[in-house]
Length: 270
Image 1: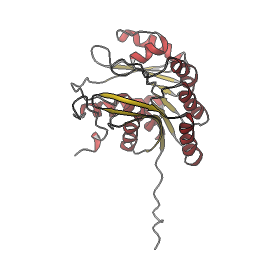
Image 2: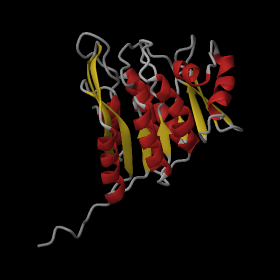
Image 3: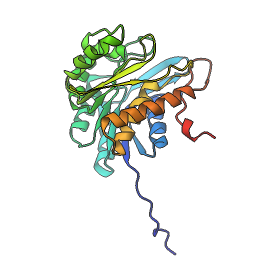
Image 4: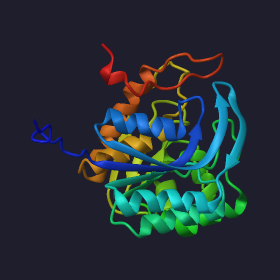
């Protein structure tokens, strides 16, 4: 008796190129959970392994460039992809490998230019910041910097909401198709600005009184990539991703003795 008659349809495919978070709240783990929550098949290229928990990062090991390239070749040659998301790419070599892979596919790419931790630590070698500017941003469909990363990439310092447009223009000048400036670190109601050089979309969200926000940036970028894989245009993908992340932050839970993660499965909880 054949079981293939009701063959299931393959869901859209999304790939994350990022670091592993042993605590499960950010990085590759957050990306894959976010993709699953969107009904997308998530695939991963691990660029770094971190030893981290709710208190911070205790150790960090970059993968050799050939290991990252081999993972990319495996996925792209056999399976293919409908959207790509990049996260922590600590060195120039890894940034360039990711940029080459993105340039070689037609898939939209969401670049989360992970350069500064929540504690203000730089996560990128200075020459790697240059590679993000010159190699990665020009191939990005959407780039999602926070205000620290805007400053790191462009030198523009945003102190209030009126500065978001200048920041967006400075990042857009580096070559991505769309820029999403995340204004969550500003006082008052969080506002994000999405800009393509011409059109501006502003997104506001309630500020939840919840300190369990580990993985927010990874989750937002992965949700945008998932929505692009599902066929949404960029403004729609971002609007839906913002909604998903806002719910995930509201449902964030304690973990360990530090900062807990957002809840990637909040829509599936009873």
